Image (cartoon, rainbow, N blue to C red; front, side, top):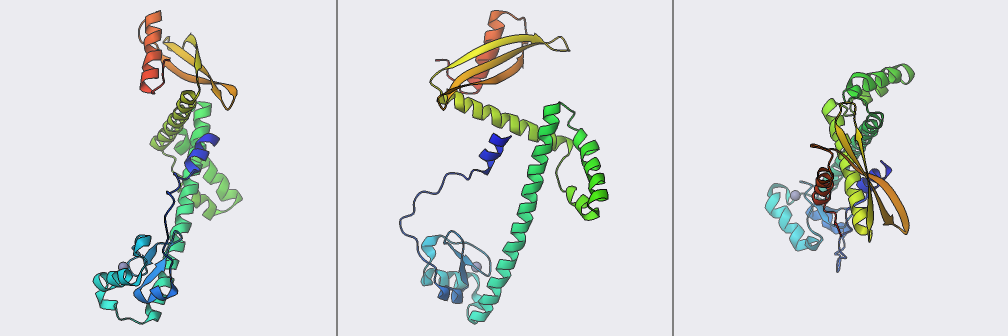
Length: 246
Ligand SMILES: [Zn+2]
């Protein structure tokens, strides 16, 4: 989970170094433009963000004259008020997106607990959420309980979160193994409660000068538990995930 969150929080690759950035000048507000955090001109009327390259009076003026011809001769005060309006809008959007980010994290954390205990996915909507809402209503009040209703915890959502997390963990593991100069496999075969033979594979690999050991996969053995069937299952995993046999 920690690895997963770290990875999700990590921003995508930083943008390549930009040659020379054009600077914003307060006077550009007369053309209806403010500036974004990444130094790009933003129209205070339609909120469109232009490239940093367009940060010059002629380009900004052209936007105003072609897109907002009706207001092109308004006084600076008019654009100042538009700018205030834009800021207010942005503030409410950012509050909203923090809340949905929290909902998303809460949803993942609950799904992780359900997966760890091997409980049915429906337990979140039938028991966990109503119980937490009851406790919140009693301990913290109605508004706190109502807030929790926004956490997505339906049967399907929980199933999707769990498969998201397990896929992500597998991808990370495969990546670590591929970065290691060599890896070793250890196999075990077991029969589950339904009488189905299961093949368990463990992997050891080198990571940051230390030997790591993880469960690689657990897959059912479809046919007999012969050497060939065992190899087919491992080979399937190796091929599907882009691991190298050598
Ligand atoms: Zn505009």
